[in-house]
Image (cartoon, rainbow, N blue to C red):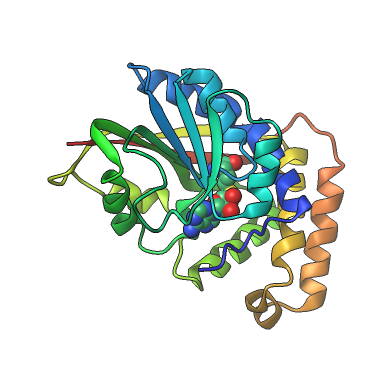
Length: 257
Ligand SMILES: C[S@@+](CC[C@H](N)C(=O)[O-])C[C@H]1O[C@@H](n2cnc3c(N)ncnc32)[C@H](O)[C@@H]1O
């Protein structure tokens, strides 16, 4: 399955901004949730390694491994890898992972891009030691009154649905209940207001990649996409403390039984 948001330099620049915007929310979630320091931790779909570094710094575990299937992102991630942190190529839709069983698995903004998230979670649980935790942060909703943001989000939602994936996958994850191998320990929604210019910059950078997708070309006119891009670029330059966009992040924890 193709990852629609790409791994170009613009995609890496967007993920740096994503990392800055969501760092506080993620750090609090991890600190509030993880009581015992894990020995081995894997960050699934680590991209250029921002989440991996944040986890390593926050939890100070012996080994932190970032897994991704983009060689370009992995090469960027390795440039600033510190002691105990490594990055490996792996398609996380298949197991086993290229590591011993972990104490903690983490993923953020990945399941929106993958088919059959429930089946994936069952597979991932097999890569944890008994008592190990799987921490997930995925989009539950994004609220905005701004028409350009709303149009952007509707295109991304449709594009992902066309791939049998779900932008607001947090809702589906929240419907998951305990099974023989996994026990749900936490399910909550963290809210984050994002400034106008940060949201518009993230969206504008992302459009550089997906505006060329066949789905977009066949369902939206060139002029509509260009108009949206121009509108987002203008918003990205409008420094305003006011936020008209808010993310709801489903934060969920499963324990391997
Ligand atoms: C939206 S980015 C999120 C990056 C990081 N988790 C964060 O929150 O900043 C999704 C990442 O998942 C990776 N990815 C997508 N499908 C994957 C797969 N099947 N296996 C491994 N990585 C995958 C992409 O290359 C990309 O780096």
